[in-house]
Amino acid sequence: MTTARPSTISEAYAESVRRLTERRVPDASTEAGELLATAIPCRRLELPLLGREPMSRRQHASLRRLLRQRCRRKPLAYILGEWTFADVRLRLNRDVLIPRPETEELFEFVLKTLTEVSAPRHVADIGTGSGCLAVTLAKHLPGVRVTAVDISRKALRVAKKNAVQNGVAGKIRFVHGDLLAPLRASAFLNAVVANLPYVARKDFSTLAPELRYEPRRALAGGPDGLSLIRRLIPQAMEKLKPTGWLFLEVGHGQSRKVRAELRRAGFEDVAIKTDMAGIERFLAARKPKERV
Image 1 (spheres, rainbow, N blue to C red):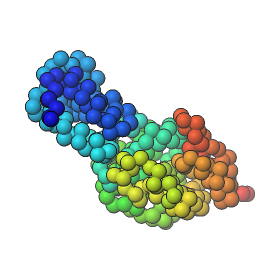
Image 2 (image 1 turned 135 degrees about the horizontal axis):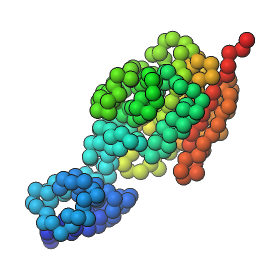
Image 3 (image 1 turned 180 degrees about the horizontal axis):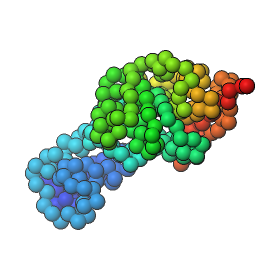
Image 4 (image 1 turned 45 degrees about the vertical axis):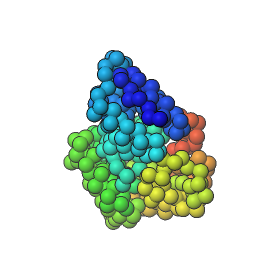
């Protein structure tokens, strides 16, 4: 028995919520609205005003195609091809990790800290991915130059497009390579920001189905999730100017180990900050002043 085609936009919305809920898609009502607004197309805020409008065959066909993808648990951001991060709009594809709300909190933490302590001239975003941190920092820090590094050339292509789209391409230099290794000069950065892969090998089987679509290289952090972070810390100590800052995002239960690594490397003023869920998610550490 086939399901009757919804005759109005309100009916299409209700049907979309039902289908997504059956497939256990998180936040089904919000995501149904996003997919429906894309299919019409219109702004999501306009949907209540259009509720009694008839749903055309073309619109319904487009909605069905989008729903099929989401019911297979393909992430909404990849279906839409774009995503909002802080106050910028980013183009996304499966070559890059989808920026999380936690990383928006990292951006706000970095921006607040750097604005209060100095006027940074040169910041490095390591593992830039979509360029979300590089773009927002370039946009919000006056006079700053950002060096965005990624080991994936495909990710760098996405990040470059996002810099152009948001009008900050002239403030960002994109570099292909492994962590800070391609930046040869020593002691020239005011800050290093990194949201590196931190999923432990044993935890991959517990991840949400959506994570199957995202690049594993952008998630996998080795046996305990900290392989790349451990490598970055001494490199940051070498590349940062005295009193320069290192900012990190880490996974649940990793902050104390990372704090110990930072102190062992010689960093001072090591601070841990929780995210909105109360998880110890972010660390900031300062390179000491030069000894006289």
